[in-house]
Length: 190
Figure 1 (cartoon, rainbow, N blue to C red):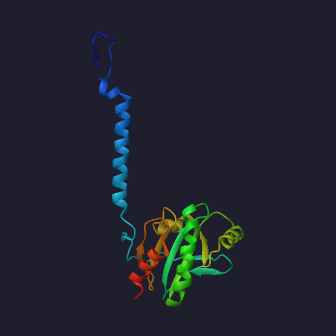
Figure 2 (figure 1 turned 120 degrees about the vertical axis):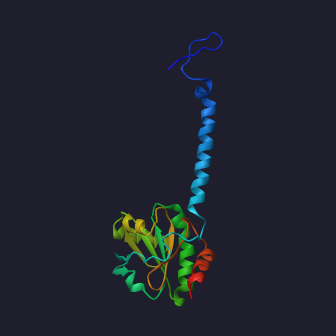
Figure 3 (figure 1 turned 180 degrees about the vertical axis):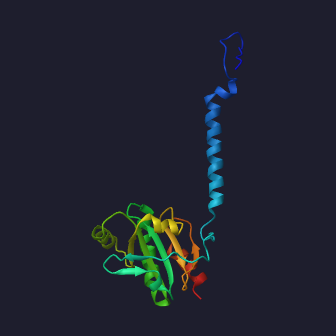
């Protein structure tokens, strides 16, 4: 590669624009901002429909915390709000009171809330954690495979399943208020 000199100085292999660290940092920052904007735009907004809406919900039969098994098949005929979460997830803990309120208020209307703990904890350890946090709705333990099958790659992730076992809607990951969850359920209750 040919070199050049400026003002009689030492030869340089690259023009000044390629070597200036300040410009490089600025370009990297601009690139990060653009990447974030594009990623946010592609992710959609809270409550927007996902590509899985209308598809059959992956069935599961999992160990229920507190004993027994729980399967999606046995919940057919009910609207099911699945909550994918983990004990290490701070927003998941913040969502518990909202989900408890929805469960208490909507259970008589044929709405079921199921917490799916994506955990390595043993069942007895998880049972203590669930009791300590005051979770009132049914909780099952799963590995990441089921979460991935539902497109839940971040927690908490809420997915609404129809009475006949189809995915109705998947909210953006994060904490949702009781009002937001009620609005989701109301859109599909009838």
